[in-house]
Image (tube, rainbow, N blue to C red):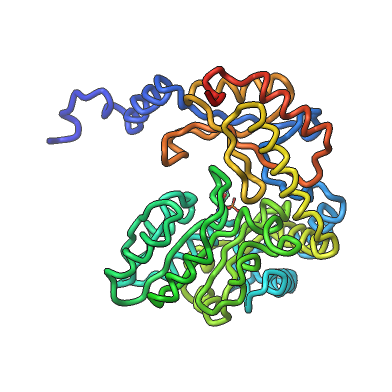
Length: 393
Ligand code: PMP
């Protein structure tokens, strides 16, 4: 049919089709809105991912400022042209050493790092076995990769083995080390054993593990004895425990060299801003000096979980610093989070389509620097505002 001949109102204007989608979203109570936050506020934040409380640490903000003064406000170009500074090289050396890998590559975000790792390591003819609970950036990596993807049940090494068994040729299993929605850890040791059996690589996204898991926060790979394993690649974000912005891929030097030569989100993207690199490096050095911050974040998470569970709420036992609390419905989750906010407590609210299982949750993040009083205030607020259906029978 000729485009002009249609009477369909959704085709009347180029973006007319959006109206119908928006109406559906509104009707389902799933509209998302941006809420700019003020720099200074007496609200208690249990929604951000600043797990170690470093993003406003004077050494970290000075690391950003000094890097900007020295290197400029931006990287000026892609890493292979003008965007690689000595600061980037230093950050890569220290990240690799801290986490126990041979080499590292820094990218402009964790999202870009995941796209880079998955696409570069899953060539045409290969198989990617991806956990059903993986973060959107890993899912998008699978969508962009030339290899085929098999999505398997959440945290199920046996299912990974079954999928790998059907394939000849290069293969990788891809998983979050700590899942961003429920805060549960992947069975990394079992996954690594299955991968070894089928000679598959393992890519783990350690966005929520760095700074929290392992000795002194050296991450999930270190915690499970997989750091430096030649068949293992870890991806990171610099935006959570390190309080900065950016991402990284860690692995064998030959994998990193391969990424430099083939990963499109590395090659065609402007290099990480010097301020972000400077902040991340300062945070990493701080964490090396103050390794107890990692255990503090885990202890705060355990305390939040224990007290919420004691109050009859359905909180998932945290393996790192994310504590998820189940809500009866998307609407009640939104109202619960709004009631918390009105009482001065900011919590995350996860609901469809961001949750693969359709269960809405409040998502709390433990921060190493939370005081006993702040934990008390947070728990009391969540308890007081909970909808009736949030409590266990
Ligand atoms: N992986 C996971 C598990 C994440 O939670 C996030 C951040 N939400 C990312 C990757 C993306 O990292 P970044 O925000 O640095 O792009």
